Image (cartoon, rainbow, N blue to C red; front, side, top):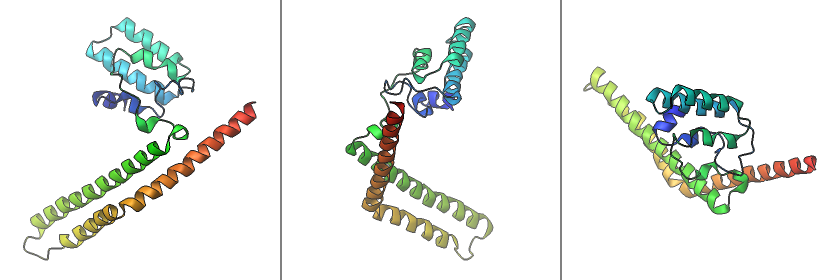
Amino acid sequence: MGAVAERSGDLWASFQHDPRDPALAGLRASDADRDVVQGVLSEAFADGRLDRLEHDERASATLQARTLGELPPLVADLVPDRPLLPAKVPLAAATPAEIQVRAVQKWRSDRREAVMGFLGSLLVTWTIWAFFMPGGFPWPLIVNAFALMNVVRVVAAKDEAISSEVRRLERKRAKELESRAKKKQSGS
C-alpha cells in the first residue's frame, strides 16, 4: 500500500494517523506504520535512490522506531512533504466547519459511487444483452432503472444526507472528547 500511495504522491494517506502532525508525533507507531516506511525504503533502494548501507541504516531505524514522530525523517528526502490532510486531523480537534466539509465530502463520495454503479450496470447489462439476446426483451432497462433511482435518491437527499453525517461526526467527536477527558482523569 505504501508503494502505491507513494507513486500516487500521497504516502501520508497510508498511515492511520499522519506522523508529521506534531500533536500525534508522540503516539506509538504500529507495525503497519513501520511497514509503510519499509516499503518506501525498499522501493527507493530498488530505484537506486539509496545505496545498500543507507537502506540498511534506515530500515534498522524504522524497526526500532517507537513513535510516529520518528518515521518522517527516515523518508523525508524520498517522498514529497504535502500539507497535513484535512481528513487526518483528529476528529476531536475538528472545528464545526471541518466537520461540515467532511460531511459534504462523504455525500460527494456517495454520489460518485451511485453514478458509477449506474454506469457500471449500464455497461455490463447492455453488453450481455447485445451479445446473448440481441433483439429480445430489453431487460437491462429494468436493472438500469433501479440504478438510476439510486442516483436520483442520493442527489435529491443531499441536504438530509449531509446533516445526518454532520450529526454522526459530532456524536463521534463528543465520544472522542469524552474518552480523552477520562484518560486525563485516570492519568492524573
